[in-house]
Image (cartoon, rainbow, N blue to C red; front, side, top):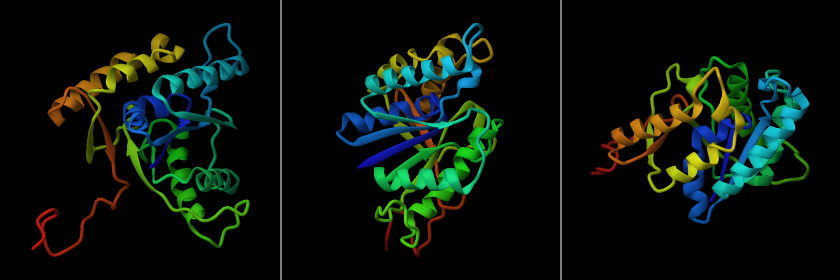
Length: 233
């Protein structure tokens, strides 16, 4: 299995689905974090935007090492993502190279415009990567399914469909998160505490110690047939 987790910024993929990613990487699957931007404009006092970009990429590489996954950061600018053919083609081409079975990304509603753009780009790239009529560097067409994952900025209308037991992976997930400066030092949001508590709460609902959640794209959780799912007549 190839799993790709796409985030708008370095840190998004990790906080949203880092424990899930580690679970599948441990099982021998190929897992990649794809960051569309570094998230560099949240730079600390005394650190330039460009310096912070380099810092966040280094941090993402350390987090990936702890979780046992690959990581890619693209050159787009934080807080300036736009929905256009250039970035859609870029991401679609990467998807043909990475050939994921499953992609995980942001939910469609967010207070952050980059998160909304990221979801829209992943959705559009799904079509472009999957249609053989598009010539993308001579790569064969590849269609992937995708899920949404949970981010504190993307909670409007986010009701989980899937609860994944990550009890055995959660301590490593928390260790990995601790390598991001913003997660441990942000004065605007308590990232580490929030995601530790979220994993605990989702685990309670899942009847496990810890869990992370996913959501089907709108409409795709509809099931059609003549019997109850799992109870075919």
